[in-house]
Image (tube, rainbow, N blue to C red; front, side, top):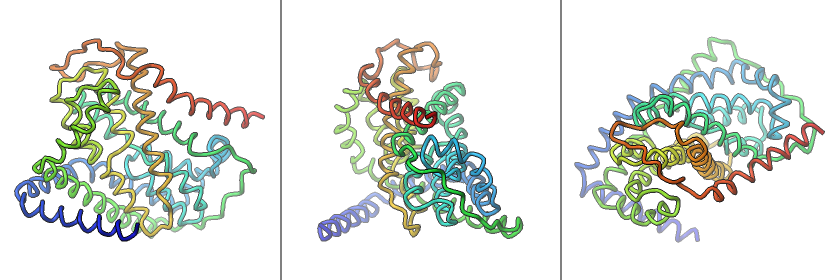
Length: 369
């Protein structure tokens, strides 16, 4: 199996090199597009949060916040309170701030290995700046829709955490004493760490933009879209969204940018965007894996968590559109709210939500007993 894996990797590298040589202009366009996205979106949105997250861990603020949130967080997720700071920063800062803070908490001794791996499954989230400005205003033409997407995103993340974690079987252990750094060296180190992480993230944004551009020139994106079209039809989505969905699975921003021109009804667009943002895309996952590299943490539960986050986000958004069809504003002037039927069958949505709801009830019952 190892030999086969090496052979496949070598073939993939060869195909990539050949594509870059044969479609050099497309690759150059991808670089320019990726640099523009990194400069206008990724760096401004993420760099301050990378610095803030590192500064919180270095100065001991995350440990203090963890002590305050220790009991409720432990009752819900069976994890130390320090994980609450990773969840909060992940929901505020966006991908991959939650993963960065989790790794720092593990390296500082505030989380055990198994605790950090479970936490990774639900703290690496999209932030309000991206959801409101990009998804809401730019893609949907509505800031209100962006806030609604953010609410669905948070709910799906919290539900994912309930599924991935377990009820505490033991008492809450005392937090490990952490010696905070003085502010000056902590600030200098946090800025350096934040810049290094932000540049690494930007590199993945640029390279995946190149992959999309070359893949489009080679016709690979169309092929994958044709394969996924039956799946999208089963979920009640138009085939026109297949290529944008494939782009979103690879690089989230490019996939979302392709949606406004499709003129799809609101009830199809809203759950689709919610699912894409919940999953995150391969570019986001590679950014996260680069942060995990060398930490000793496994990404298995992270992958499970992101897949579940995408499914729950889609289910919640679909149910919202079905129960409150007039609460979602029109996405653009050219898009007509056709009053189409619910994108997925209510029974399927209900089944997807039964497990986390049951799990939440079990946590609450044990916490009160």
